[in-house]
Amino acid sequence: MPDKKMGRPTDNPKKTQFSVRFDDDTLKILDIYCADNHLTRPQGVREAVRKLKDK
Image (tube, rainbow, N blue to C red; front, top):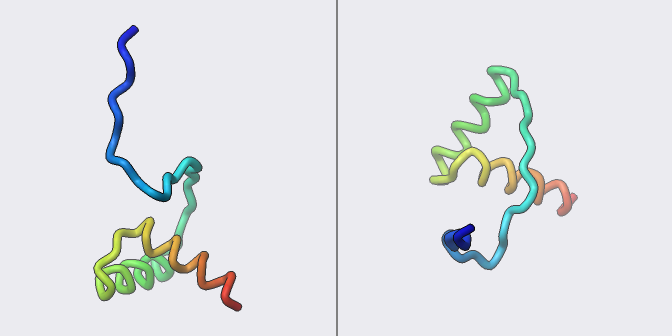
């Protein structure tokens, strides 16, 4: 069996994946935030979770 190819190297690997359902209004808020800050949806969600720690 051949060795797996190495993906893009990263300093912060994301090992855990989970899905979440959003209502239309919440998704719109996320999409506007991400567009304004040039982020992907996952990046926007991670930022929001980190802000919870700051409270």
